[in-house]
Image (cartoon, rainbow, N blue to C red):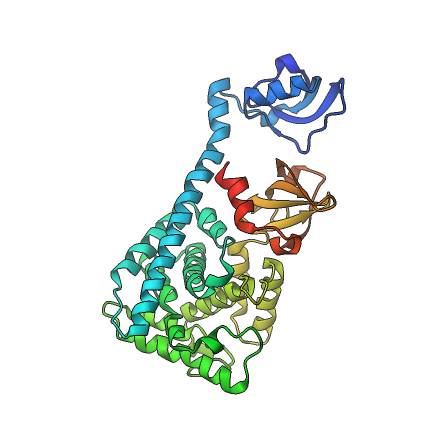
Amino acid sequence: MLIEKELAELTVGHYVVKIIHQANNFSLTAAGHIKSTAVINHLKSKKVYCVLIDESKTITPSDTQAESLLAKPSQNNVKELKQAKEIFNQSKAIQQKLFNDALSGSSLDLLPVIEITNKSIDAIFNSPDSLACMLNIREKNEYLLEHSVAVAVYITLFSRYLGLDRDIIEQLSIGAFLHDIGKIKIPDEILNKPGKLTDDEFTIMKTHANHSIDIITATAGVSALSLEVAALHHEKINGSGYPFQVSGDGISQYGRMIAICDIFDALTATRVYKEGFTHGKSFAILRELAKKNQLDTNLVDQFIKCIGVFPIGSLVQLKSNKLALVKVRNDKDPTNPQVHSFYSVKHHHFLNKQEIDLSMNDDFIVRGVRAEEFDLDMKQIIEMLLMEG
């Protein structure tokens, strides 16, 4: 029920819809809960006298309890994102060691891979959005390292969404972590060529899959399932893939899953010579590939539902001409998540951060965007809005 409240009656936990009476022209960017007494004092300083609240959304504990309750998500965000960042950096360091060992011909040590993938799986089970958010903070010149880490994260998220057993998820994650190890055997001038590869260059590039299979096969302790998903990541249902042109039922569900994860990360990642696509465009490309019978249609649809129309940590442009970072997904209304607005597209400058629940606001998402479109740094944006709470 909507009722008017004098500011003197306003407490932490009330859900303010709009300002009713004031001396100035102060305006709320969005409806929301009063999270602290500091917010009430701020309204007083702006000479706000009366507000409209939605009593059905009031958090009812005492002021101190309510303030603690409301602050908890931000505190958790900070802790979980710091943990996710640590896992992501550790994963890259392990990936670098694997590449160095493979290049020198040394046998790979699987133990660090098992440990870091299990740490990643635990983090995803506890807070899937935090590690997924980290995938939006990438270094343009570290694609080779970050791609395999990202694919391992994506297949873990996907496997968890599909309800697979923990043991299966671990094996899939290890296979994804190792799936591109053979790329270290490809000459740099081909591996990092900015333009389109010639037919001869592409023939050489495709051999990375064979190299990966050979290296993984020679690694002690790798399960048959981990090897299987690594071997199948470039195979297509219509038989047009490589290295063995496996087709149809010859590609297991797990092989079909890693193909989707691998392509999605390749599409969305920004590299030195190529800007990544938005999630929306990448989803559309996955669907086109499914129509061409290269990818599994049902699994593509499931993957899109798993990642979300507007994934956590992705950037969107609002009708109000502001940029916002997606903070909380809305599974009941996927096109209207909770976001942090922070930047004016019209005036090209940063704004005070505002939390907006788009399902309860007149504003809405116009499109997904990339930070590079506005000469912004995604790492700084996420750290500013989330790491600092």
